Image: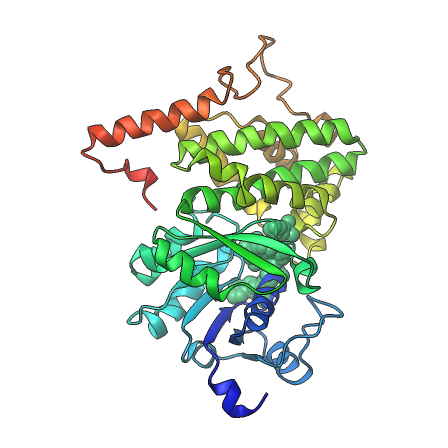
Length: 378
Ligand SMILES: NC(=O)c1ccc[n+]([C@@H]2O[C@H](COP(=O)([O-])OP(=O)(O)OC[C@H]3O[C@@H](n4cnc5c(N)ncnc54)[C@H](O)[C@@H]3O)[C@@H](O)[C@H]2O)c1
Ligand SMILES: O=P(O)(O)OC[C@H](O)CO
């Protein structure tokens, strides 16, 4: 490609050149954009520029010529029509402060590729972006789905969902972030899409624990199925649409993350199940396992909303070292012996708990003159 042809390409920026940031950069470049990555380490920027490789995160993967990188944020963001963020959730706020100085006056879409909540505040990444960039939420989008980075970097066919409260923003991002091996769908349920990605990580840690302990498929299938009920109950209580949790960002991602050894959350769980302490697991992991930091804030939000999350509760106990991993089960052993309805912890069959809360929220909105209750606003 000549310099002139390259200059004519739409320009996008990806902040964070780890496993997912680099893979998403490749998705965008293979979809026809010129992508500039921001890499924290100068030597990684040099490797991407000169060797068209990111060998530490994506061994054996060649990056397109239309991908470049810079160690300087201002250079990476210059001229970008869309900005994608892919750094660990706990580091997002501090990094956005630097981004804000460079983009606060522009109206480019900001897209979160992250699947965690902020430990201190329990906020979703789109909420942290809205706070730190002081921007219109309709400018913010999130991407989620069954998206194990290395499989996509190897160009295996995959689907994802792009969500924004603005249909227009979701579509603009989905048009840019697609190519022959990566298909993007859209929705406007940001709460459900983000929580789907956060919550499946927690269930994947539980499945890793099961693997580490050596239990088999019945235990895993039971935890995955009950885990989806927990995910749905929690997300709906926060304002999500139940259907979103049945889609790519919920069930789809739950399947991929729970069954793949590529998953860092699953791997962290397996090490815990083999008897390692949380501190030792963190030492061994050289990539981000978001679930480990999200457990406590999710359980706090669940308590506030009155949602029972027995599986996530057990993950917390294993992380805290207060439960033997071999006791992991689809239910809390301290649960009373009364039979429960299958679909929810509240004993209401047919998804009654999640749907009932959804109905209650709609009624609350009517009572509030059409406004959502404050916790439901994205
Ligand atoms: N890897 C995947 O398959 C995948 C897929 C979908 C979503 N995600 C999500 O993407 C996000 C990023 O994950 P990843 O897989 O790229 O993680 P990673 O560990 O591979 O890379 C993280 C990147 O962030 C950088 N970083 C670490 N601490 C930082 C800090 N304090 N400030 C700035 N940069 C920092 C690292 O240098 C690295 O480049 C996570 O929220 C993850 O859940 C990952
Ligand atoms: O490696 P994990 O556990 O962070 O999972 C990666 C992606 O979120 C799978 O969709």
